Image 1 (cartoon, rainbow, N blue to C red):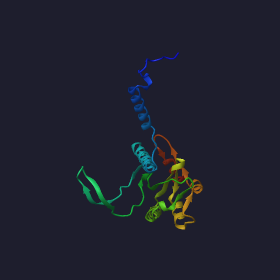
Image 2: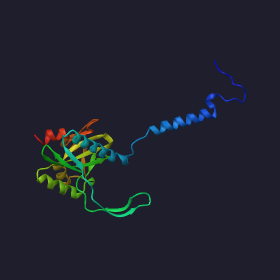
Image 3: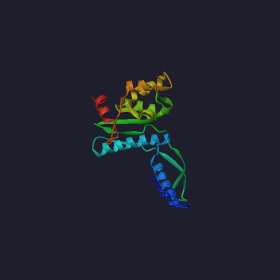
Image 4: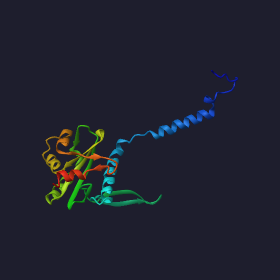
Length: 206
């Protein structure tokens, strides 16, 4: 049964107040549906590793930390608190993380790629290869954690393989099939987020 309102009277669904409420509700819904921008995915990957390492530390499994990057501060703006406006790196960076696990020194680099088919060697700096070769020479467990962003997969790839590929350069990138062949898929979960220690147990510490 339809209701006929007198002339000049607006229905509840079209009143200014109802329209205002509808627009507000729609606006709030839109705000809740957001996507992680590509530029932030690298930071999300780093956060996952940091959370994992914190879990290992809290549960007395391993002591692994992100290395601080040494910078030389040139200018600071104190207008609204202390804000660094000009700085430069004091020395070339080596790798992202190091620590100790089961009495062994751990050293690794974390990288992300937006390619679904390969990992570009251009993402690796020459000094990182030099550093990894040096620590491996002294018995370190060294590797790369490579996040394939479009596939939402992370692989642990031994540094020995990456260094050899980097120096021989059969091509400008490591194909995904090679990463899967020589690397190990890292299990993802809630806590720890990226559980890479079982891979070290199985393939590095036996």
